Length: 372
Image 1 (cartoon, rainbow, N blue to C red):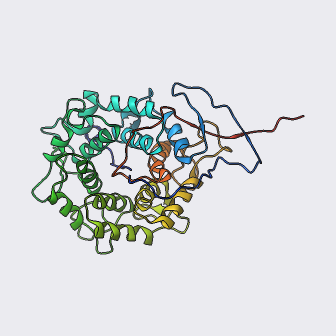
Image 2: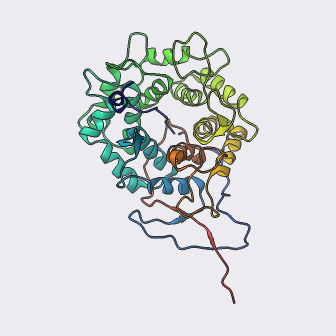
């Protein structure tokens, strides 16, 4: 695919998080050193009015907010050129809501997403180009933020998404570049439309339910000769089906996730064996609200182990590494955004930014004891 096509296509849809968690997550974090009764460092001031926190999700969200370009969006680099990354920016908006913090940053990012040139570059023009997964993801973000979905940046997002529903029940792209719609977008569409007065078309729920593999997992791509389940797709589909009343299908998806959890508590991407923060964050955000507390807490613990603590450079404290190989700035923002969902223990269906604190917290760290 040409560079022009890549710029116009929405980036890989990773989403994220919502039912209120009925257990209290552990308060311990990677920030807590073995030093007794530590004194906290005074957080550095910033445009976001930072405060110190021991909460892993809030610390991760605070770090993520400070990575925003110009304080309102993310970018991705292709062939040495930076392009706006609306998908990652939405991931961050959802993460801020899940953590209940960095609301000032979330508001700026939402305003950036509503700019006409940014909106059309992500959703398409609505006629010759219209992308199902991107539309569903942005609709969910608008709902989480309490924006008006039917007039977001001048676009009626629910109507646009419904216009992409095919007779089969699949939400499909309308594009000269082909149809890249998949289980991520289908799941996000169900979750987002469930929040609207019109609800979710039954055919769309049926389509996703029918895509389930025999082992209970869900594939990313539809219509493959061999149904191969994927952790991320299963985590999203289980939440979507639970939200739309397909509890048996959702339960089978959660069963698949628990059966494919690594011994370290994390989850691997399809075709891989090592745990990563993205898949673990999404899976944990499905397991905990789904009542799978043992598996969910194992996932939560594995994410905390990947979080950069007080022994790390102050500039990266609170961030979550993609995997155990170490911190990599190139993938840290996306890994952290996905991880926040699992660290907060929230899923997608009831996620809301209501009541979120404006500040972007820093990780609370002990200061060395003063020498006498």
